[in-house]
Image (tube, rainbow, N blue to C red; front, side, top):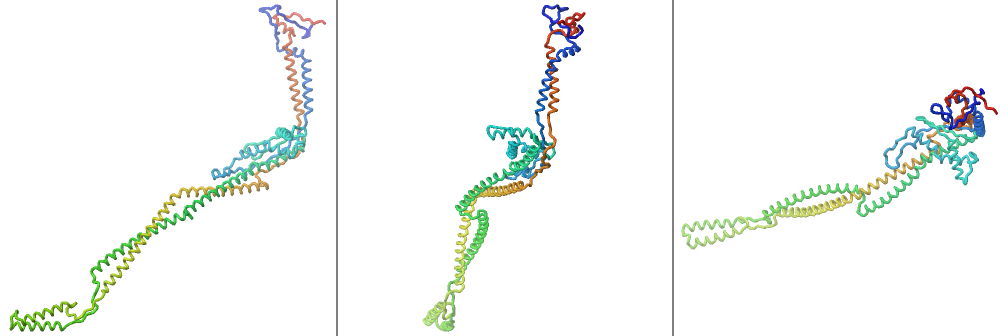
Length: 494
């Protein structure tokens, strides 16, 4: 009669309801929960035992795993210095240390690197239980398992990358991680360095082929227009025009000088007699005879008149003698010989020479003017051809620069690849993986977690059953539910 679970009352819809009636749901106090849970103790114990035994059994199936560790030092290398494939824009730009570490981390996390490691170590060695319909499918599954066991650790502003790999065999864990490091050093060179040389070679060959075509068109252009060297010919024509202009001015000055001399010679020749006396003989008797006749006439005039016959006869003789004297070249000359005038001949000779010089200067001036015209026409022709020539010249210069630049960079890329292949790399392995001595097991952790989970679920099952089960368990609960005092309790008799 005194036990807590001896009171049991089932309410019904027709039961008495005091002061408004009492509901079907019992009313509990916090002290009632202990009695209620104690009533469900066997259920909670059963739930707890089943879950705990299952969890501990699963924990004992877990195997011990071994984790191998390694680390690499990442430094700035030539592959992270920007080298444009064309031009010089941005040449020499470098990444910061975090960006370099991020790039190397991305390479380490690549699936292709995991495939290389699995192929190198062997899928049957790493994961002998993995099977597939074909080798590629099995390899893909192995890569997935490898990635779950592989971890990469980095920190800001720290140039080292820490690596870890977990496996059930300590020796295989260290072997796989070391194989990954070796394959990583090879794979990163192919990603960062080796890919530039073929592209540069292709660009160099393309530019060289274009340069050959342009050179052929350029040579045809020069041959078609009779040009040896465009720039030299243009410079030579400019100098030649200056020389011809100076020569023309000199010829014009000389021509005017010769024409003035010719005009002066013509004027002088007009006033100079063509002949002159070479020599003469003096005739003094004619003058004495004339003087005698004049004296005789004077004597006759003293006796005769001027009209007398003797006087007139003397006048006739005197007149005849005067006519004879006047016919002589110079008065008193008996004989005179005439010949060419030397002055006239000299002037004539000089006029002939000056006339010839004038004719020669005119021909030279005409030839010079014609040469100036030809040179000017050639210059105008070169001016018309200059845009096309400049186009060819620019294309040749650009292509020659590209061929030289691509060739230089190709050689640099090959040299970098050779240096990287020989070990001159910016990646250094700080520590290689060694087989771990102590493994890690999750048995205790799983068992502890199973204990907590089983207890929680058992308690939850007890509480759920407690609230779902009907009846009044304790006298205090009955008094609160019915709103009536409980005067006595009696146990249930069997």
